[in-house]
Length: 543
Image 1 (cartoon, one colour):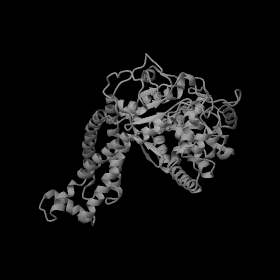
Image 2 (cartoon, one colour):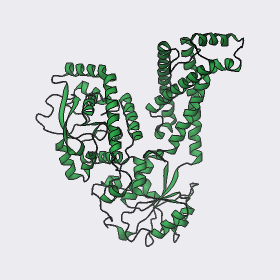
Image 3 (tube, one colour):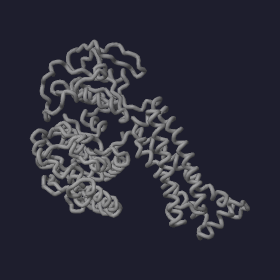
Image 4 (cartoon, helix red, strand yellow):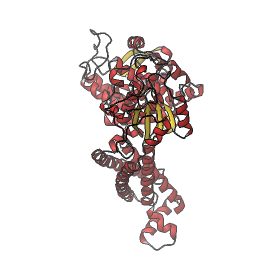
């Protein structure tokens, strides 16, 4: 995986985006500038079409070279719009893109939306400013629409063919990193399960080296909170088959007659016995060793790991790979030593200032653009159910300081009159009909932009909770208060990755996402969260 500004990107996703950017960009640049080619070759050409273009350029007081630059800039801008439509329809998520049916159906939807949006943008720009940023000098309005539509249709067709070839090449090239996991207890199985569930991360688990029975029941060297459920670290049928048989690297020989081990070619390997770690690595073509031992005392093969590292094999900790694969902090990693010594969790005054300035600019722009929608939403709330338009409630903010949060009311006015503070459920009967629509589209969150202006919230950050629930969760989940070291946000990493929850386990999972965001904060990370939020609103996947 590539790491850019503390944010991880799968290599295959980067390659796919780069390939499609170059391909669609080249098609757009060629198609939207071809009317200038003859004039570039021979300014005095007698070609009728070229002379017509020359007359238009003369009327716009533009030279051919200047017109070409404007056409190329506009073509690149429309290329980005076209690719954005693919991204909003999740076509850069490999689990979806790798499926032929999903890829075909979503590609048709995205191509239609992309062509329509680009036609509107290009047509509006041509009407407003014929020589502006998104204009194509030398073309009339009708010609602009014809060229944009036909060029994008050809470009999307090329992208679909190229994407089919890309997935074929990825399967043939075997770009996945072959990972051997050192350990066979809960932490190792949890990591293996996550690798299997997230093939887009670019890892493949090829074996789990068993831990000696004498370590069963030992406490970990640095005990973390005992919040790991049996289901999260339980061995699955698939991960059980990955346990290597007759391996003695971590203690006395352990036999697992039900285990299976296969080579890169997929053929069963013979049982392995007294081989060293480096011999096992070579035999299985291992590219990375991940240490996921439940207890490292008297078990961690330091000498073998050092030998492997000096031989060019990556040696990583389980927590680091777990973060890359899942986008959240591993439960077992939630201990003081990991939070203190691991990279990240830095707070810099300049970063805080930049975030505050960004929040002010974005909130002002969003309020200016969205006030008609907010007005319509307020009227709809007032007309569909009795009670106030706005819902105000005290929430816990940065450093544990309380503030008053504002939202459009999506529940009955007397929602907690009898029950007191309770979590909302997925089909909560207290939610009004219009409230369900607002929650799906996140319209109920818009008044929080005023909280951002006031400085009590940020555009991106953890979800603000009520003091009642904070006290309840902090007593059950160690480190829960760490989420309050930053301002709460209108949207956030946990909100876009995890559905609405109403249990302590849901709160724990969201805390893992929140800590991942705090640990890896960057401007690019915030931007990616905002784009994903737009995707959530467009696809109505809110809660």
